[in-house]
Image (cartoon, rainbow, N blue to C red; front, side):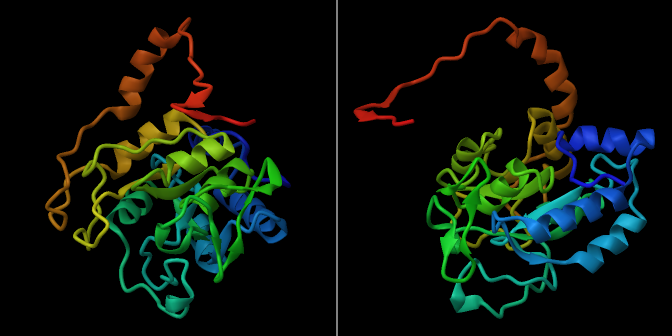
Length: 270
């Protein structure tokens, strides 16, 4: 059994499961131990026993079969707390699971481990709340992990697990991804459905994932994207995200990346 969680991406973790080099149960125990000792304060709730039950019967043939998964606390997962990171709703329990999470679990095979911290109601780009305290950056504990998907980003970048859910209205995936050295994408609105309660504001929020590679993002979209009758704004499914990624990687070789040293008139400090 390994002493620490997997440090590669989620896709390579699944490959290790299938090769027999590692097991979902081993990975989960490593994750739970890391969560217990972590200084990041990236989780507000941990469902260890239900995760263990799922790991014991995980189908590693699924796209993310057996991969431990964090759920951003602004999302609904049935019978788990739904506080929106606020003292106002500290005792509230969710009565349903969001469509994206249903798909990630049933079609993708992820194992939900618990809730990751966020800013209160997703309103700030730092994850500091009276309910949960300060979520810290794994690169420097004195720095912020960003927000609103700060807990998801800190947990993934900090080596606790390979994937966690996120959502982005005004940067809530992209900002913490940038703060923690992860890829972050706000997809097209409606690509991943917001059901079953799709019309709850703010309508600018696009659901997605915090992870360690573009490959993970494309596979996640293959699993979770597509029309949901409960979300009138959801879009038809587009297949082949991961497959098409492979065909474009060669075109990136030799390209240069530009770094902008200012934001119009603001100097960017190290």
